[in-house]
Length: 272
Image 1 (cartoon, rainbow, N blue to C red):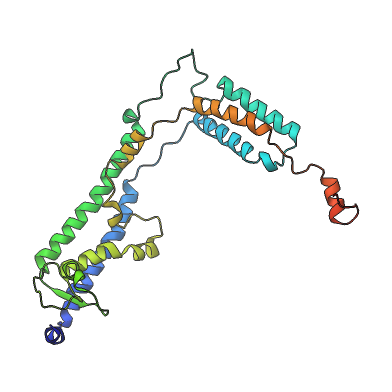
Image 2: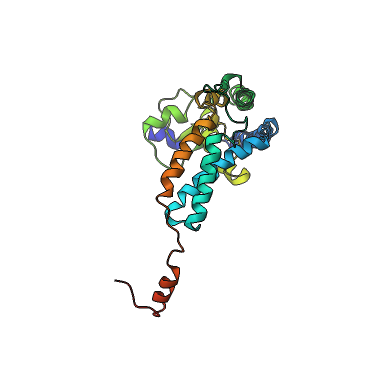
């Protein structure tokens, strides 16, 4: 085995006409794929003014509660703001569709029929097609022109368990495991070029094909189906109870600030 490994030499033309072209083509295809995906992505639909107000009202209440224990707002103003939000939540003032009518409000819309969910499904299918078609073409090109080529020898030792991964398409049991076939070089580039793509295109890029292999083309629609539309009427009622509870936890940071400043600079005896 060692004698065969020593006597194996590669023609430099294999490096120039096989190794470099395969690597360059995969890099360029990944970059092209990134920009094609960017062109195919649809712009998110803008929310209506009422929907934005509905979300911001809930966020405002959550921020108010989060700062209750060390609040920059004096207690009378805090209580006034909290009571105003509680009354608005109870009356449904901030709901985008208006206050609910009757005791049995209409259920939220079915996410399966939501146009946003369908757009997510179509976007996922487009991304999958942009990933699959170029990779199928590249693999067919390598199998047709470079099948059985040995391209490179890795400079570090490996165990025999890597032989099936590094020498695909070459049925040679006595060859050193460090030699890499053309088809295996394709797979190494397929899974290993993500760092180069991040360096060229940034962290949030669409060039890494291996990332989409485990992603379903219907991921956008499935996520919308498993995560139903939020019922802000129920969220507002729960937030109303949370606001009432946080009123008892309110602590103004400016309470007794004069005495604290005087004690800090030694103008007042420390409190024991």
